[in-house]
Image (cartoon, rainbow, N blue to C red; front, side):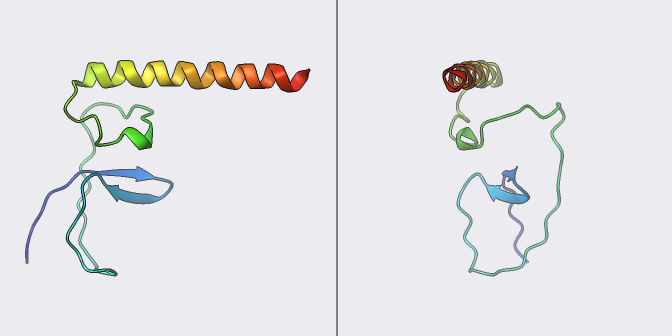
Length: 83
C-alpha cells in the first residue's frame, strides 16, 4: 500500500485534488479528512492551489477584492434590470 498526502478542495459534493494524482480511472482510495485549524473562508474554487506561493493574508485580500467586485457587479446588474 502506498500512502500519499495531498490537499483537495470540496466543491459541490466532490473532493477535487489541488494537484494531479497518478491513479487509474475508477480507482478506489481510502480518504482521511483533516479539517483546517482555522475556520473555512469562502474561497473562490478557481483560485484553489493557484496562489499557494502567496501568504494567507495576501490571498484573503485578493478574495475580499473579488468578493467586493462580484457584489458590485451583482448590484449593478440588479439596478439595470429594474430599468
